[in-house]
Image (cartoon, rainbow, N blue to C red; front, side):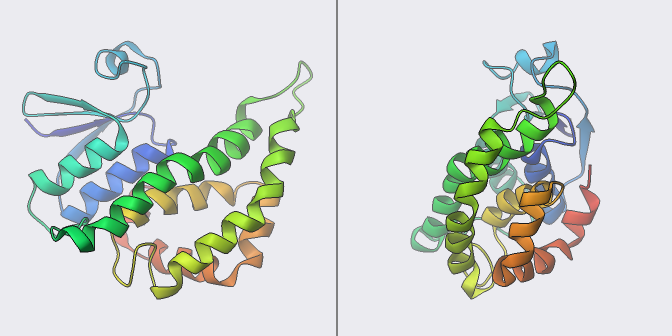
Length: 203
């Protein structure tokens, strides 16, 4: 059975695992399903995307799916096999999937898209609080990508987690402005965005 990645293509985490599959050269089928749909809830206990199926295995959560793709298929390792080399990649995967995702996606991007009043105006309560934290976040990201990529000089799974969020951030004015003000993060983004895996997974 071919690998099935299930979830809406607009999801940053769906794009992450798709990028991982592309980088590994894994053939997969994208099955577009929204969060909380019956097919998704049959795999994820909280109905979140992405989920996946492969050869009788059903799996939820982007980090678990990404690690499965990296270890179950041939192709370049996106998480090093040597423990000390893997440690910073795993660290940044976790940080991006938790703290960075909460600030950029949940408290900023999602608010612009979904949090609107009865007249269709964006409710800015969460957005304005998130924007105040952008400079500090970008300072930390700029330091982290100083060696070329998020977890060191080489492209890794950590980059698959971060770059879709940076792409989404630029769709809205404050995020675009912060992105333009950070030369290090901007240069990093465009360097990774040149990879075929990024272009092939555009929503």
